[in-house]
Image (tube, one colour):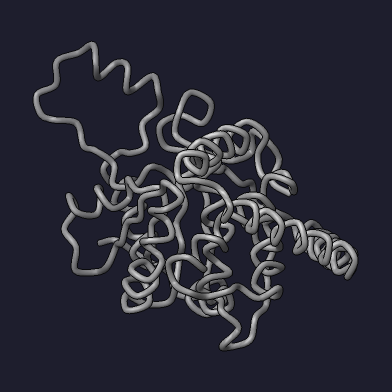
Length: 273
């Protein structure tokens, strides 16, 4: 479970460009972390707990479908407030998933399977979920993306290529819209201004390569500056306009095709010349 206060978002707490500073881990720490994650995953596979979570999601979806338009908008606003305050608590995630599967069914005529809900729950807890081809990974990945975005954290959904970026974003755009969320698309052929606008959305679909190169461009431009530097720039007249970052920081990512992106592509360094 991602605890309250650990969901990064631009602002007073995390600064204007959130990013996590990670100290290099020793070999022993890597081994211990792997063993801990394995033990936690095994403990989390209890059929009873998964069944209870899925049942709760189904009940929330049924209840959401019974509300009037005005009541639905009010309830969604209240849910966003609660997620922003308390983080991805299990009960709030179940309610958010319920709203999502209701929107998917209304907009796309698709009923999410239990395996998709469970996979979304696993990902919302910061873990990897393995799904076979055809099990509906696109919709499963949307569940934690929506939960994090409703909690106020900018989300990057990272997938394998530009075709999937466009396809998945356009497929799910009506669903995000029903939940009060905006969607951005970043592809290789986009200019900096268009990228900046896209990255300003609640949920942004992109490839790992485009995201990393845009982050490197921000760093080459001297970004992200500290809050102190930003205040100094506001006080001292500048000869030229200060560069604006492309990203809003590295806050939250949902990774599709994790084996390809975290293993295969990760072996090739990305260099901005």
